[in-house]
Image 1 (cartoon, protein in one colour):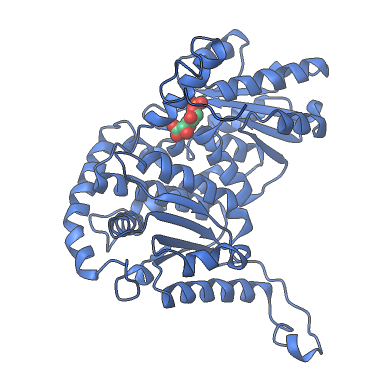
Image 2 (cartoon, rainbow, N blue to C red):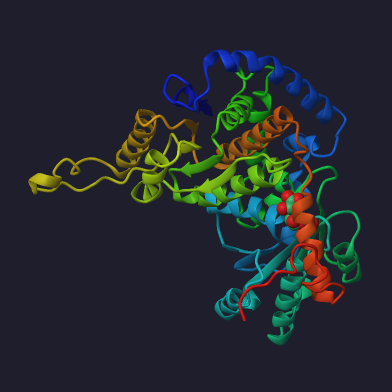
Length: 428
Ligand code: PA5
């Protein structure tokens, strides 16, 4: 995997980073890398996530998935970090069987899903680190009841993935459900390379060991200098760009199967780094589609963005048939693979010409190892950016405030009038 920061340098962009600044920043990167290494050695909260490729054992994950009644559909019921890792991996790799992510409590969406899928061909993984997240528990209760109504024995179709204790662990215990443990010290958004992200992949028959091997490859490329480590180059450059006014971090993969990855990245970056009045606002885009929409803004709008372009080096070949029509004959005999690469190169060049910082990430292939490597690299990059910014990367107090308040409102312990800052309402 290669991370290229050339187009994010000051010589190409008014808000780009001067090379000299990056060289100066490298001393701070060195100290941060040492801090991260110590945190990993001591399995400290958050840093422990970077040990997952060595510590996750595929065997119990595969065994838990195999222990439930064989099914055509797999529902991951979770939210945020308890859902996006699984969605990213399964969408990117597309193994056997259909996987769904129930990560919202939109009644219309749940109703439509339950009407669409055959519950007698469905298994579910209820994922919540804390075991007390309202959205996840509510969706589980709705699906459970739908299974009971359809005469489907839900206990034979349910895996629980949760922390050592909590309401979900108690429920799993009570019904003797196969249980996977969210590893200690791993926040939700950093848990993709644990059972949280890998159970759905196991259902799809994907090679978990290869995904973890990709993570280990990224792990092996961590170094004490941003000039020697793709992950730290990305994290440090993003940090330096934010300091120079790149407040928006657009993630633009050139692969449809990486759309969920852009969403996963948005959560990782926003929830980890949006603290103490700082943090880049993630934007999600898809190449080449968004060349026909958002690219206009990225190129010609406010100079407050950095665009990350991601592509696999290997793609399937889909030849474009020859045509005798003059105006489009340049397409004939070419390949969609060549076209999407040309679109990628054109976007990078166009951003560079307009002075918009861009970072290029190229993975070898959209295969299990490539995904493992990409996810690990971004997590390590995020931790590096957090260290440099001096924020507490592994907490999410604003998210927790929202969760607690929603629970209190639902229980009737609070009203909008008693919740700080929510007492002003407009409309009738
Ligand atoms: O990254 C995080 O910590 C959050 O996004 C959580 O994953 C999310 O709030 C769900 O929490 P839980 O796994 O406790 O249900």
